[in-house]
Image (cartoon, rainbow, N blue to C red; front, top):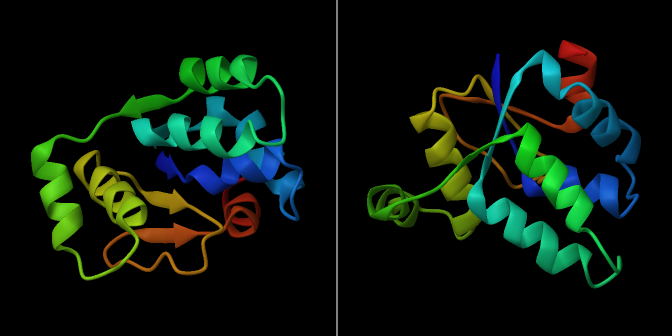
Length: 130
């Protein structure tokens, strides 16, 4: 199974937000599926989390070593910009997930709605697959 993991799953874990336990389960079981993230995910984790956590380099290295990191080029960005949705990051993650034939996207973003791919919250993913 191939899944794209949204930035907010990592932030739920790092910042110990409401869905911390589910994020921990997902990340502790990365060996059970192919995890993909978009390259900007690492940058976003760093930017957001370092405001509250002094040193997250070890965590970023762990993510870098356990997830397949996929970058976007002009073609993917054009497709993401053409989607009529104001969240460019979500659009880009969707385009990357489709490009690499992901079975689902794991996100806790309530506004993440796209067709032709299963969108699961961390709680739904844990219940269904773990």
